[in-house]
Amino acid sequence: MHTVESAVLSGYICPVCGFAMAKPATDFNICPSCGTEFGNDDLEWTIGQLRQAWLDGGAKWWSQSTASPDGWDPVQQVLRVIPISPIGEPIAMNPQHYFSLTAGEWNSWDTTGSENTVNKCRT
Amino acid sequence: MCLRILGGLFCKIVGSSATSVSGGAFLWLLSSITLTNFQTYVIIISLPLRFTRGFDPVALMDHVQKHSARLRITAGAVEYEERADALFSIPKPDDVLECPQPDGDIIRFNKKTDEFGVIAADQIIRTYYIPMPCHKLAPANRKPGSCHHEKTNFEYFKKNCRRQYAYR
Image (cartoon, rainbow over all chains, first blue to last red; front, side):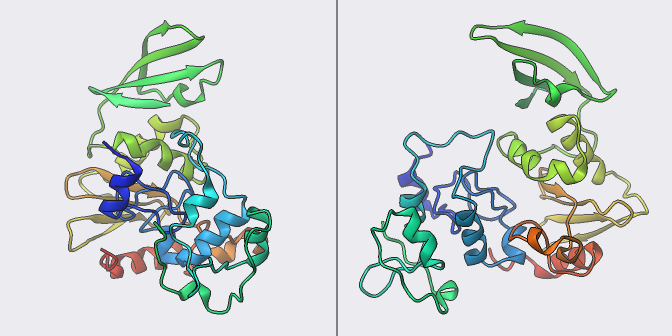
């Protein structure tokens, strides 16, 4: 059975939005959460660019045929894949955006070069 | 929403939004069944796909959602899958270019229509769409995931042929 835990263990986490996909993020599989088609979109754009576009669009659930999980929380979900600073705070690629998403819970961070930072999983 | 089952299509229609089954000439409407909660299920038999095994049914609707507008698909998943199947016609049409990949995938590109598709070695279609060069879009619409950076779609096809799935 597909669960978040099984997806984490098998590495099927969408690197763009952090959603636990039923299939790997390869082979033109589309993430139902952010709509990224892996092998197509990520050939032309960086993961950071795709993530930023999804966040800028309001981090909405993308798929019309797959329902979002009960209690779906895009902010908690994306925390799985956004870069983490040395002191454990998320490094926002667009600090203002994260600030608004989290109602001011986080500080802003300098974003220089953050797109190329190796992602660390918080879970 | 439609699922292909035993060569037929099983579509769920809510209210009057029947666009996904408004179908081409290759469809025959057999019967409709009205179930509870005002949901009508329509069983449609279509000709089996001729050249491929079609899409993974779980993946099909997301591909339709993502790519059908640019393909000017009007009959939903049925038309989308039929047209994807046609791109992989055997023998290969003269206007279609193809390149095999080391893992058994085959990429095809129709240089007249700009249709682009990838099929796996097991004859399941992985994707089908018309790419869009970013320079053809207004700057405000050049969003990540909406276009590619090559000058033409033919260049995009060649780039895909060269990549050899290095991300695997």
